[in-house]
Image (cartoon, rainbow, N blue to C red):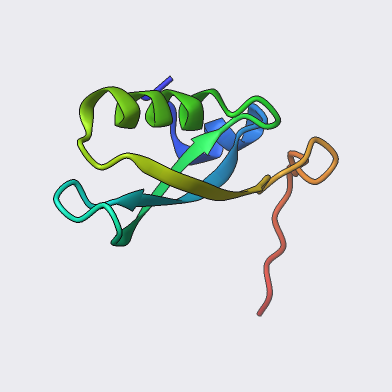
Length: 90
């Protein structure tokens, strides 16, 4: 899937998912920091987002406090159509 262009991903139903992860600093547990993650993903299951959250929990020292995300489907099936033709303006 990583070899596909952004346009190919959008035509296959992927949308842009942006997540803001709030996490506690490893040495200062009372301090919250943020990390922004963005990737093309499939709603409503969001497999890429959940894969990243699992990676974070397994590999990063700062424990997650919360995650906020938004998903925007850039194209829907009825919005794209192939057009054949050309107009020439003088």
